[in-house]
Length: 306
Image (cartoon, rainbow, N blue to C red; front, side):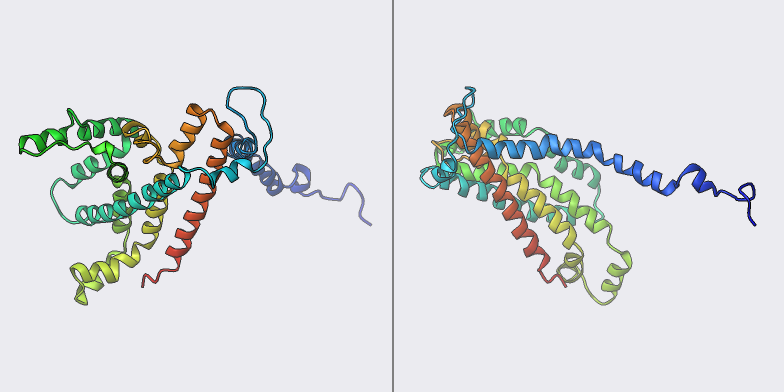
């Protein structure tokens, strides 16, 4: 017969189950991240959706409910289609330029050239500068009276050009300015992909006679698929949200012809005092970015890189 004195109590029963205690403690580590997510992402999103269904002017306490009227107004807004097209041009156009230049620079800097560390730093430096500062610099390049580009044209006997007066020209200028500033980001992503490739694979390809363009197309490009996807998605989202360069260079002009959805939201809110409609445009931009990035992600995942 076993008595109470002879019974042994396991240490885990005395102290509690350590694994369960650790699991409970780990669950609490999610709370700060969850609070930040709710406070800075979920709440503003839900608040914006709520404001988009009102006729709020952005200043008064009254927020008359209008339902989906603001969303219906988008289809009758004469400037809205132009703004959407501009946003897609800024996003897709700058992304294409960044991929071409970024990959070319990465391939160059992956070779044995002197001073490549300095070159890499110079190319990446504009990405560290505030877009407002970079845009001011480019403004003095394209300015009509004292702009550097027009000064050079006058020296060679050519007439000055009002670069910011043509709707199509300003869209191209803004796209190129944004692409050049952040091309260093793509370069670093591709360079990291090139430098993490298995040297044995590259050596085996060289033994088999793969060099130059054949090496790039058959070996390096397929191995760069993850880097390509990362670079495209990051650049695309940044281009679709473009705001700073537009406000500094053109302020959306001439007229509304160079606005993106982000700058159009600012004009609707502060200039036109249509905070409800501005919120609706913001929700549209949010949904558009999700749709475009999902389409791009699925398209890139289906590419045959082999």
